[in-house]
Length: 101
Image (tube, rainbow, N blue to C red; front, side):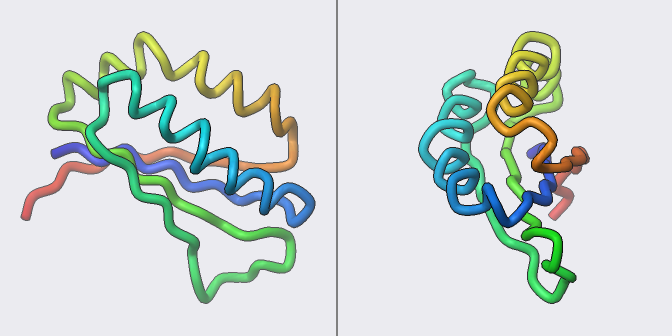
């Protein structure tokens, strides 16, 4: 199992709308690519939230090959949609993990 993790800090001005959009539109659209089987969204706790809350979304892929398909065929368009909608009101970084137990 591969976990594609996207950690995002959002400004307080967009927090509620961003979270709703993630749950109702963005995450379902990524799952609909067929590259991931599930996704979990979580809020980081015990961090400085003075300039915005931080969330992680973990997308589960059955294989590295499916993750690679997502990166090659869908990632650029998905990232562009995020920037078109939210501009510079967030920062994000991505990491890739393999479940070993």
